[in-house]
Image (cartoon, rainbow, N blue to C red):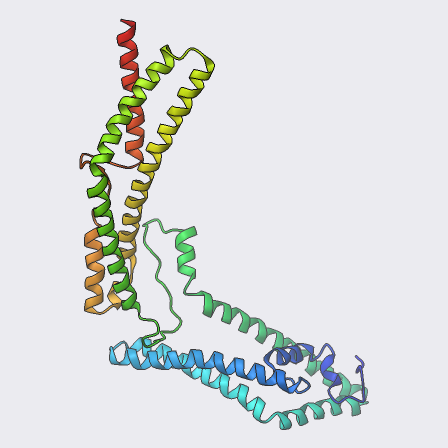
Length: 340
């Protein structure tokens, strides 16, 4: 394979032998021919990325060491070693760019001055083998990076799309255990959840105490009204416009009943979801105070919150179906009484 520009010492790196290496170096901002601003920007981005990983990981190792979780410490130390080596390699490449550029020039000079067929064949064989190694290394690095970042989410996806027969959750894998000081406080999140839930319960109680009797009167009036409306629709409303008016009123009443019961059903479903979320949380990783908060939330939601009509009938989808069925039954009773 010929060299595109024999006068350019780096021209060999634009051939198939080294083009993948060159492109990767360009992506990382380490290729010597890149502009200085681009190199500086890439270096700053790399430094920020490494800092965002190394500091939380180091803090996590110290944090979990004081908590006695030695395996967490070991896993964080492994990550720290890898990141430290990667950072040192990157910055070494930047600091000694002049020396590395001389090596590139030497490679280009060797290709330019080697004219013997046997020696050139040797260069080509080793270059092709080096290209194969580079491709294998890149593919493995891409797969490893993908798995490293996605492994914490894989159990969640598998639980959703391929649930276990025992209805259990898969173990969640964490590749490292960072500690973000007070920036991300899991227990503070539980405190907020607890207080928000308490405020929600108070709001539901106010709603129940204010409208409970009104809902009871509404249900009784609805059952009676639908029964009479159906009777009137069958016997009294003869004109098509009258029947259409009665049908519109009937549909409007049904929509109103459904809407009230739908709100109550959503409240019950939300309470059950909070209870399940409290059961599935990693409460065993919390402090004693955090565990008590989760316990209180479970205790408050073990019996779902419901809205009732005067404390007699619960409002939900089942109640909606029951009201509709009862209204029709009363209409049929009135119809039979009229026939007799």
